[in-house]
Image 1 (cartoon, one colour):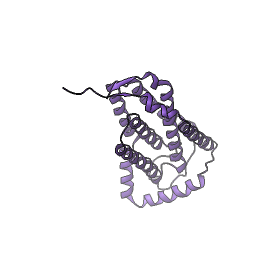
Image 2: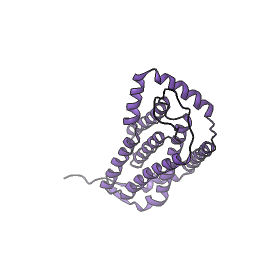
Image 3: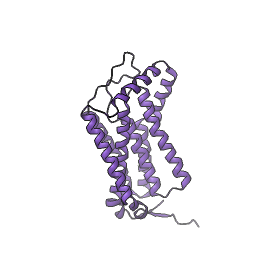
Image 4: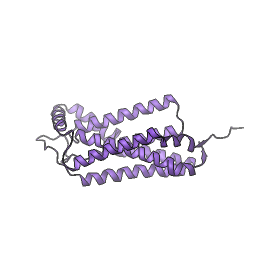
Length: 234
């Protein structure tokens, strides 16, 4: 006779996201992202001088090293491509729906969609031309703020880490997932800047906005949806 499936109740672990430190993190991250957005919209970036110096140096190095350019393109267009990241979230959403956590599945899908719409909206609203290279590595003509790759990677990895926390993942799994998320975030930043597609401001802004979206979503779920989620087998 098989043992009954364990039940998980969302209310207990998720309500910890409404504590003072967690809400302070939400406010600080959101404020930093908003400040950077305002500065970029005003065509002034606190990283502008460093942006030009680093982007120019890395670009010149990339032009002379086709092998690294190819590796970077594979990583940025396949491993850390926004659609790859969204596919991971889609798998998680399907698994949650199949297991009966339908509010959480819809909330996760909605957060991912909201992040995409926010990034595309800001990209269209903030128009900043980047230096025109004489021998471009990439065909892009503008440094889009925020970086879609950076924001999507942070949102996707952040949502998956949040789901692992909700389900009480053990220390080994949690730290392994955290390491993958950190490597992904740094990898996206490095590949986009190295290829001359984005400036440092773009990847930093994308990462900050991604953290803010995930933090706000987690807090919102804890307050409005978790109390009505109930329990379900996993």
